[in-house]
Length: 197
Image 1 (cartoon, one colour):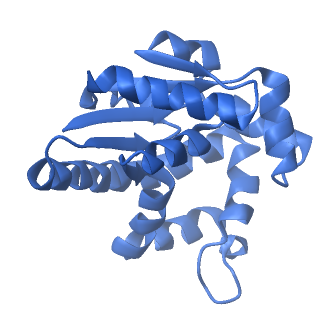
Image 2 (cartoon, rainbow, N blue to C red):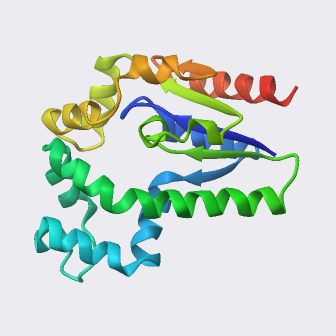
Image 3 (cartoon, rainbow, N blue to C red):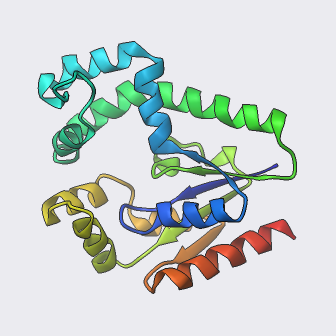
């Protein structure tokens, strides 16, 4: 099994790269989905979030409104730190168990952990290769605002993570995504070919 850590700053195109890897047969473990699972698996986490951030982070049905929570934490670095201290220990435990499950059940496969915070979590050593998707600042902001965020929200998200150049410096492979989707797809397929040989 080859284990890849796929990361990049918000708006770089990491999720699209993950989709192209999936199309070529890679198994994708999503950091976002694992974060959602944490709330279902460990009921204490949601209680801690409500206690810390108030009931305005809930939907009318009592489930977590991720958008409202995002607005609160990405605008205030201390609140983001607090959120991370609640969620991340559980998330990393769940992530590790998923990886171990695949180690036992698949061989010769490429398994990709698609997660924005690989470097921030300090888990680079888990992976055989780290792939960073990068894009210039203007493109990242445009993609985030096209997805429904305000410019301020987009900038808050970008500044909540390590700078792109730092992520690139820690990568084994960097794919630039400033062109059209076909170019990204071709670069992702070339990357996959290079690690399989």
